[in-house]
Image 1 (cartoon, rainbow, N blue to C red):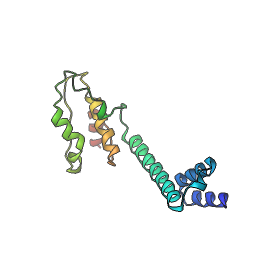
Image 2: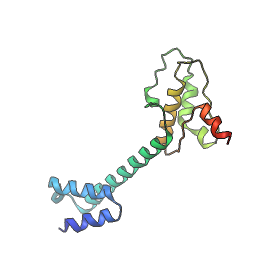
Image 3: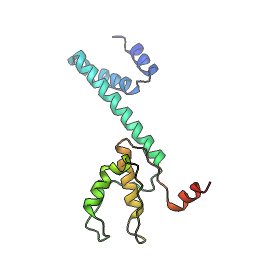
Image 4: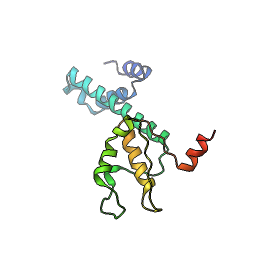
Length: 144
């Protein structure tokens, strides 16, 4: 099989995930046992996965989230007055689709920034654009 021209063509077309999968399958010797449709399925899956991961990484970088936080890590047992059903609705993200703003208020040290970062991270995973800003910076930007 013409491996190098195929890899060159995949890379030239920007299909880097497919090229990597192609090289991996060839290197493991698994190639002979796979049919054409299985080959194609593996190549497409790897390309789609690589593109998804790159988009997520880009969205997270542009979001400028302050903390590494995920909604799955929220501890509802902590006594901070977090309404679980309300937060579950916020996690769904319909408020973002409806263009509704969110302002998180509370005393110092209860985790407002962490919760905002967790919601931002979830929104990025849901293919939404996010920009994390604290109120003083937001007001400075709006004053222009």
